[in-house]
Length: 135
Image 1 (cartoon, rainbow, N blue to C red):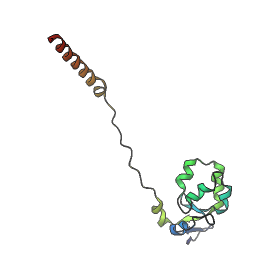
Image 2: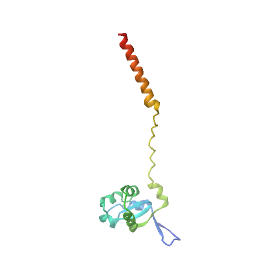
Image 3: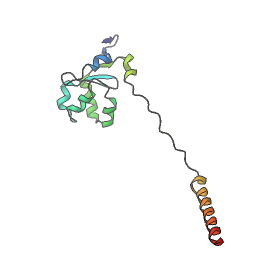
Image 4: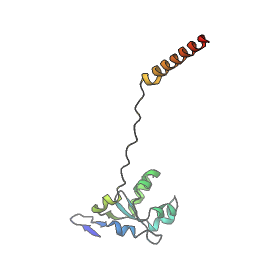
C-alpha cells in the first residue's frame, strides 16, 4: 500500500493482489470505479443479500453495481465504506476486454428486396405457361 502525499486528504492506494485476498465474509473488499470499499460490516445490511456482495469480493464490482441501477441514496452510502483506491498501475488488470462491435448487416436495397424476387416470379410464371401450352 502506498499513499499520495501533498493533499489534505491522503489517498491510500491498494494493489490488486491485496484486494483479492479480502474475499470472505470476515473481510470483504470490492472495487467500484477504481475505489476500494471494505463492505464487510455492510454484508448483512445489503438489501440485495450478502451473497451478491460476496460474489464480487476481492474483485471489480463496477459493472455489477452499475447494471443494478442503484439509487442516489445507495451511491451516497458507498462513501461510508471507501478505504482507498486501486493503485493506478493495476487499473489495466481489471479493465474488461473490449468486445468487438456487432457485425452490422447492410440494409437491403429495393433491388434485392422486391425487384429481383419479382423478376424471378415473372420468369417462373412464364416458364410454367410455356410448359403448360406445349402439352
